[in-house]
Amino acid sequence: RCLVNKRDLVGKIASDARLTRTQATRALDAFLEGIQASLVRGDRVTISGFGTFGVSHRKARRVRNPQSGRAIEVAAKRVPRFAPGVELKSALERK
Image 1: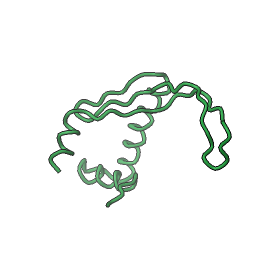
Image 2: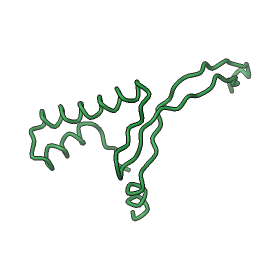
Image 3: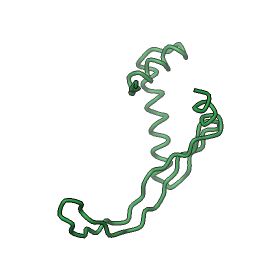
Image 4: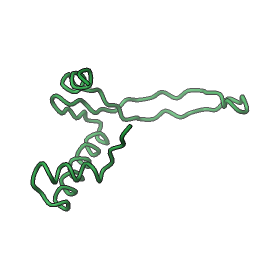
């Protein structure tokens, strides 16, 4: 298994788009900040062919600590979600 991190992505962007690593870093940071800002506002972000980022609301619930068996109250919260697009799903199935 191979792990791809931000540094690897910056290198790929710089190479493919013929940018410096600094320019590629700024581009990737702007892209990620844009997605984050949209999700914070409660908007969905759809990247055609890739997928959709959104926010789901998880209700408050009661869970059990597996070690002690005691019940714990977990507060409601907003969580990020990602749904892959058709092209991404197809690409994964071909591999």
